[in-house]
Length: 108
Image (tube, rainbow, N blue to C red; front, top):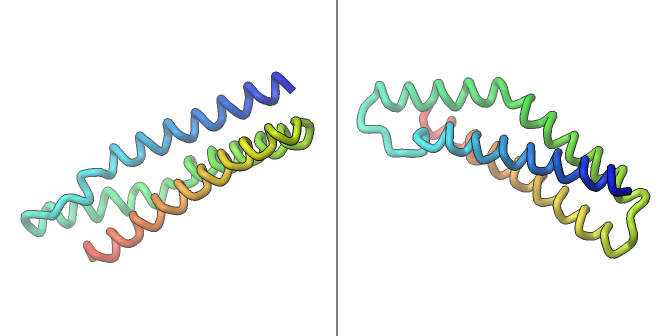
């Protein structure tokens, strides 16, 4: 159980780190563009990120898979905590993707 716990923590931390980096790398895209060139640059950056989102989605799937394994053997009180972290990761992913798609549409 301890090994599965460590693996889950590591995968969750890896996903969270990827998420923070994704937000940092796309943050300027949410600034109000001052001209067409800035709008075009922001749009391109968002589209590049969205086309390469498989890396983040893979990390999310790894979190879910390692969490499921851990929940299959963990004590009941621990299961809810793991499930909550998995759900948080999924919601964070969904929110990021929604925000990026909305910004992409606005910039187009």
